[in-house]
View 1 (cartoon, rainbow, N blue to C red):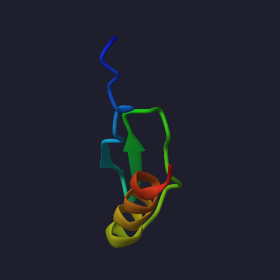
View 2 (view 1 turned 180 degrees about the horizontal axis):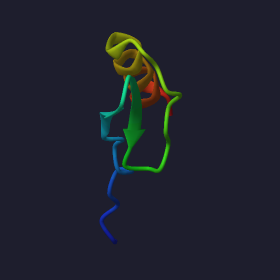
View 3 (view 1 turned 180 degrees about the vertical axis):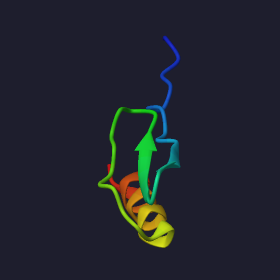
Amino acid sequence: MADQQAPASHRTATVEKGRFVSAHCTCGWRGPARRARSKARSDAAEHEASP
């Protein structure tokens, strides 16, 4: 039998552009631009938790 690997987990990071911060993921997802870093981090955490 072939070994089955679990699907790759999402890896997120926040990226700053001027006054705005957005969350980006290795799967290609990008969160909305935010002024609050904490909100961008929570967007990333919500994305990582989603299936």
